[in-house]
Image 1 (spheres, rainbow, N blue to C red):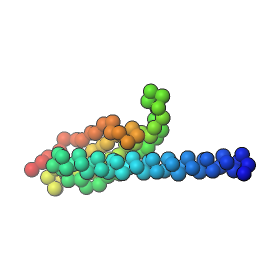
Image 2: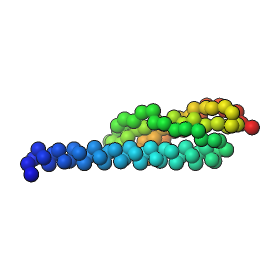
Image 3: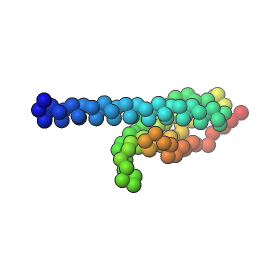
Image 4: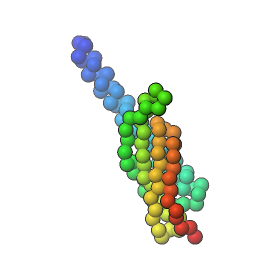
Length: 101
C-alpha cells in the first residue's frame, strides 16, 4: 500500500464519518422538533435542513446546522419555526407568534 492509497482511504473514511455525523444531527433535530411540539401542544407538519456548515467555537470544530420546521397551533394555520444546532446540541429555537385554539 502506497502513501497515496493510504491517503485516499483516509479521505474516504473521513467523508463517510462526516456523512453519518450530519445524519445523526438531522435525526436529533427531528426528535427535538417532535418533542418540542408535543410539549407545547403543537402539531408538527414538516422539518427540513436549511443549511449546514463547519463552525468553530472556542477552538472546537463542529457542524452548525439550521432546520426549518412547520407546525400548527390550531390545525388550520401553518407556521414556520427555526432550530439552530451546534453539533448535536440545540443552540436556539425561534418560533413566530401563532394562534392556538
